[in-house]
Image (cartoon, rainbow, N blue to C red):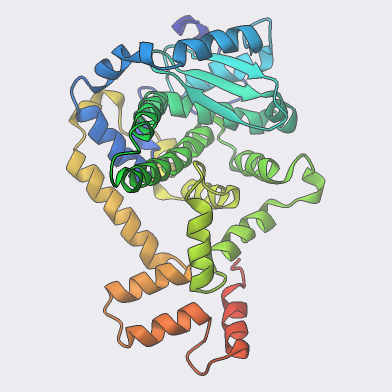
Amino acid sequence: MSGTVFEKAPARDRRRFPGISSRAYEHPADRSALVALRKLSGFDTVFKAMSALLPERSLRLLFLSESVRVGETQFPHLYEMLRDACYILDVDKVPQMYVQQDPKPNAMCIGLDEPIIVVTTALVELLDEEEMRAVVGHEVGHALSGHAVYRTVLLFLTNLALKVAWIPLGNVAITAIVTALREWFRKSELSADRAGLLVGQDPQASMRGLMKIAGGNHLHEMNVDSFLAQAEEYEQSGDLRDSVLKILNMLPRTHPFTTVRAAELKKWSESRDFQRIMDGHYPRREEDKDASVTDSFRQSAAHYADSVRTSKDPLMKLVGDIAGGTADLGGRLRDRFTGANGSGTGSGSAAAGQGGDATPRD
């Protein structure tokens, strides 16, 4: 598996992005963390040297012995998709890819020395060709961003921290670390979704794939627009109690909720940033060494500030009001938490407030 595999052009006419930097598609929060890590001289080298302490070699042997390696004679259609994805994102070395028997649809990219892509049989059976192409592009995007390295390293550090949980206040510190890691994991998934769209260049296929992961292989019973409307309803419905429940539901997850991923990807696909990439205007890998950590953190902070400002979630609205110096904060907090609309209290007002918030926008 080398650069010679690129002698064949993609299966259909799609744009290629020579020398593209992963910064082009990375979510701002993901990008700021990665730029900072890349600036730590010798960071990758030190932890790759520790690979003997990690289960990576064991995992490679396990996949080699218990899974099917994708190639010209095994799952050749997936092999073509993999080569195609590497061609479009200009990845010189094609990662090894395995298909693993598993009833749960899933895919992952792991490894320190070299990334390994693993997809389950359930996922292969669930998705059509264009939907699967977006998934393969998603995993190649993880590899190009270096997520496989950083995820493996951070998981190692987390497991190491768990072994010293007996230290006073250790659990509190570890919980904070794990929470922060999961927040980064979730943002890295949004980055990889964007990479998948750049590879497939078919927004509807990307949306369908996410919808199938949520609802199974019943495409004739589902509708992409209605699926996206669920994300809108999820964001803006309920009161502060629901906002708190959303946070509690999200904390243990390493992936964003599927409807939210679809909505985020649709928003990016319609953005100026995406169009500029498609027009050939994007950062190059050769410029990565000059990327500013300060600028990256500034962009990340601006993204979160804009998310709070534009969010329809009751808690985020309240945060925006606090930041804006809204008067009668105590009263607004009470009304938001009970669902009251300010004109009265009781279940009738709460129901009216919730009903108004829950209406999806077209």
